[in-house]
Image: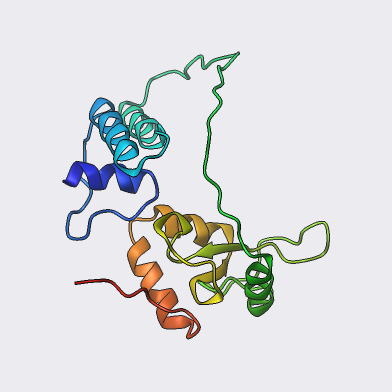
Amino acid sequence: MQNISHVLAQQGREWIKGLRPARNVGANVTREIELLLAEVEKSAPTDVATFNTQVEALRKKQPPSPPSGNKTPSKSETTSTSYKRDPSVVAWVLNEAGDECESCGCASPFVKDDGSPYLEVHHVVRLADNGPDTVDNAVALCPNCHRALHHAVDKHDRRESLYDKLSRLRKPHRAT
């Protein structure tokens, strides 16, 4: 079960509560779990976790010289699911935040061509996890905080902190 949590974490998803992601899960096991998850979820398989697992394994080995890379990388076409987001929700959340990240409180990292501050709207409960596209589930974040909410070791604590900071956010009701 910790191997499954590892794959979910590598994909930037919630891992199984109480089962911290295992360490040292090989790329082959990771790929098999990715395929099984896609089958269970009736979705197209990805290789996100497999790729990330391979990168981490290679980082530990640190080759003495730079790799040659691939001068003509291959490409593949995929089908993805995208969610139709309500532009009024995004606009409201961005206006509410002004030019500050609602997580760290820092000013947006830059101003866009149109003169508006650059912040990203994040759904606290992902749309892919059946979260609603509503203002009580969305926050405006700087890119660093946005990535941290998907990939940081303390992403769960960061999410809880958002619930504490922003009274408009509503925690989902979970069956026990």
